[in-house]
Amino acid sequence: MEKISRKGVAISVTAFIFLLVIGTVLSYGARLVSLGTAYKAKMLCSEVFVAERDTAAVLVDLAVDDLVILQFIDASIDNVAKTTTASLYGFAESKVRYRKKTGCALVSNIVAPIALEAGKRGQRESTGYMRPEADKSVEPLKLSDADNPRLTAVLNAAFLEPDSQHPGRTRAIIVLHKGQIVGERYATGIGPDTPQLGWSMTKSVMNALVGILVKEGRLTLSSPITTRNWQAPDDPRRNITLEHLLHMSSGLAFNEDMADPLADVSYMILRERDMASFASNKPLEAEPGSRWQYSSGSTIILAEFLCHLLGNEVYGDFPREALFEPLGMTSAVLETDAHGTFVGSSFMYATAREWARFGLLYLQDGIWDGKRILPEGWVQYTRTPAPSDPEAAYGAHFWLQLPKEYRGKGDAMPEDAFHAVGHEGQFVTIVPSHDAVIVRLGKTRYPQAWQHDLFVRNVLAALR
Image (tube, rainbow, N blue to C red):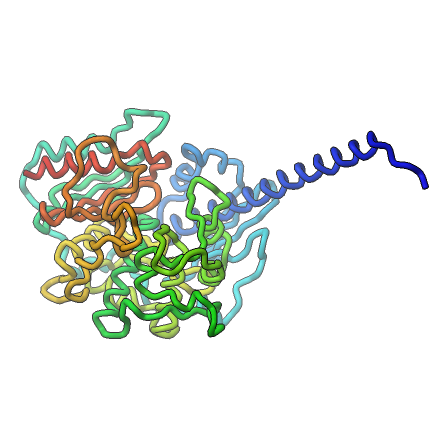
């Protein structure tokens, strides 16, 4: 037998390691490209067909700041089929389809190019989507006629860009004081009738939907969560309750790092057609209720659980009938994934005034126009820190303190302030002690470009 030299072994090992590294880099790159095409196709679809924005303006938004690399991804729109397609030189194609009344969802991508199947929940028609002109039949938010130069200056400053390298890209601001709009500003191309993506503010809307079902006696906070993936009697995930999900303390593994394009959250909302199955398949890492960990997966599981409770026929119209219509949020759209589950973690569109209406509901302790929408004590429960959160910064799908990336170094805000917060600088801030709701929407790719605590303090000072 021929003896293999040490030199030959070293060369073989080196070649193997080189090929392994190249393979890993190519695999990582392919996943990045797949996510990039999915993101561009999804955002383009929702912004054009749901928000009804100008296509050229949307494409500009999809190439700003750290998204500049997306300009190399080709995108097209089929206005007849209501689809958008994105690919990089024909590679890693992603297609997204607009479904009437349920928004845009993934049809196919490089990982799973599967056409939507008839009969799936994602194909169910709903009567939930109405255009903004329906607002004519809704009592409008009252506009204050009082002149407030200090507030005007604060709002004007919010649209300035002192750091050209890290722009804030504010799109809309509304300030409600004592139930009236006392300040309102929009960026070019955005107006009062433009539905805007709330990202994780959608989680707070899920809080309201759960609260309504609790009020109706159909749910309790101790209700165990039922999913398709936790059927075995000895599955420890069956110990997860509704309250655990609301408090982000399910104990399930989930990587929410938005800075990591390959984290669970990005993969789930951009590449998964059945997001709830992806999230509920995660293993248990800690005893339910013992660890706080912010997780979009928890909200997606919650969204599917509501479908299990309500049934397919009721589920699709429930947000509109139970929440949006009573509040006059007539253009609000809570999108579903391709399987038909509400993407309650991330994908709800509403106008700035509608987001303000939502905040006003919580300012008024869950009462709207004299009618109780949320159960008595629900807002207080929402504002109570999650028991497993060591920083007491999070309640039940609302933030009690602003996330660190949006905080400056100044004085703290009023202790009773609480917030719906979303990616790219979306905020609905409720301050009961000042009888105020402050809505700020933007395309803020660099969190340090928007210090929301400073802005809120300046607004409140101007309201005195």
